[in-house]
Length: 368
Image (cartoon, rainbow, N blue to C red; front, side, top):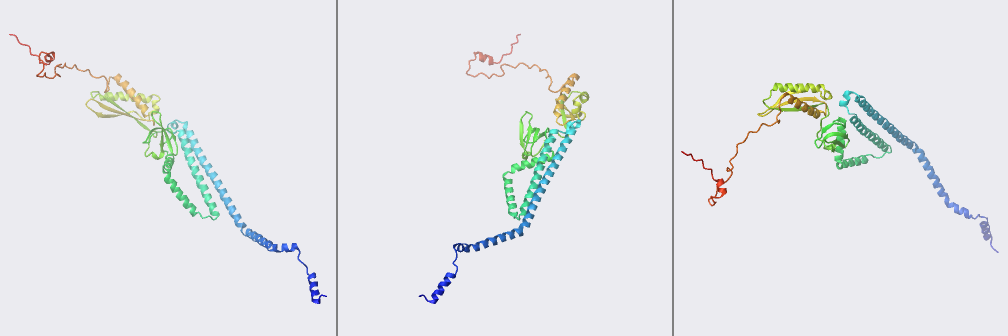
């Protein structure tokens, strides 16, 4: 028989509950659930604490973008309206007589378009660049390294493309200052001719022989514009010093008055044809200077017509220009055929024909 203590131990063991497999498996997962619950609680509290900051940053970025877009549109439209007003003014003046002389519609149009393009590009770059920097500053990004890198990159690009930058800046200032435009005849130093296109980097010229010159704006050191204001037509009339100066002046005055009253010369001449006087007096000629103020670019045409009229008037008045018919040449005496012959040699045959031709002719004998 078993003792009493053994029976009590058996009863206690039988009465104590034994753990089930499911309870033994789920017991270790209780700490993981608690960690997840704590993480979710911390995340919710963090979001609750920072959502106002995020909302403020988002609204600030949205406001910056909206203001930049609206400002860019307003500035570009304002510039476009100003350029259109410039073009309308040029078109309104083009129908008048003075407009046809002083205003070139194509020149004004290209100049206004170039200025408008430059202004719109500069305005867009400034507005959008400022907006981008403000957005980066809103996110508390340090802009010092970015600005330093941009400065270094700008310097490197400037050194590498200095010719391009020089051409571009020179073109901008040429257009803003209206140094020349389409239709002008200029002397740019490296080339001369009529301007057919003005760009920010290159100017196109049509030469006198029809060739097209592409001149970089950075290479133009000085510009002579022959189409602005007025031009001067000058003609030098060369006559013999024996001509009557009063008669020469009277003929030139009559030619100038007749030319000033005829079309289209009355529009090309912006002043009376003046006889300036003697420009030079030489032994075989004297030069009378004639000058007139003309429309820009028409000086050569006026000079050619003036020379034509002066020549016809002088022929009718009997005034001879220097370079006319040459004087009759006087008859030159016949030369001695033996003058160029050398003396005969001592070893030559004195009876030969050559010696006879080279011997001096004896004077005729005088008979008594």
